Length: 52
Image (tube, rainbow, N blue to C red):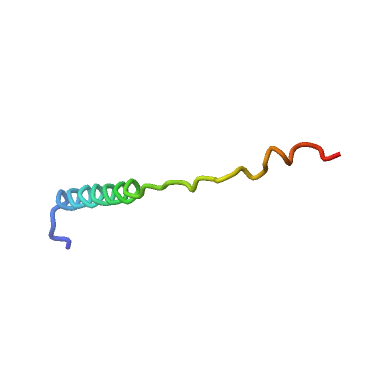
């Protein structure tokens, strides 16, 4: 719409930039990721001893 004043374009750009930023921040922080707790280590301490 070329009949709009440039200040309106700047205001819309700032508005949509802030909305996009807030949307991304909310999507990033709304997920509470809990890593799966490892039951045991990959190796046990008994298997580190020599068998001979």
